[in-house]
Length: 145
Image (cartoon, rainbow, N blue to C red; front, side, top):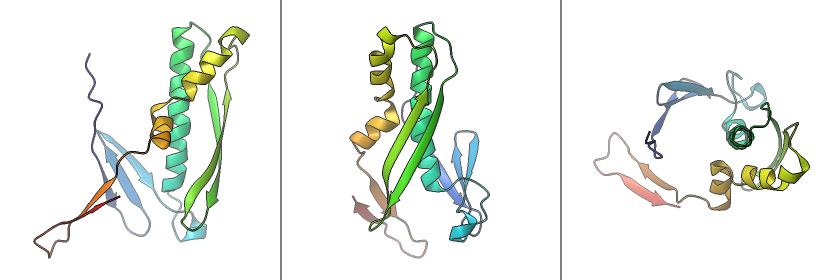
């Protein structure tokens, strides 16, 4: 079965600080916490970002355990810190609980989980471009980062 490795998603505003991410047939609500003026109806974009990394690591870990015919049931906990000027995630600590990984496989297990697609995207950041479309303007403005 061939899998399309490229994709498109849309983010739609739903009032206040609420946005819905539409990806394939799924909807993910993001919002800000009440401390930052939101309604706390979903994770913040930063929480979703960190959660995406943790989920990708968990997925890679489970695939590894399955391939090695080991017991499933990985848990990943992510702690993160925010930096200022500019606002950014400055540190992420992932704790991976994978009971039953034998001593002889721990190094290869560690290598696998450190090369998830999301983690690789942090190491080798994607080229990000912005195209701003204004309804009243005939031309789009392109900004490249």
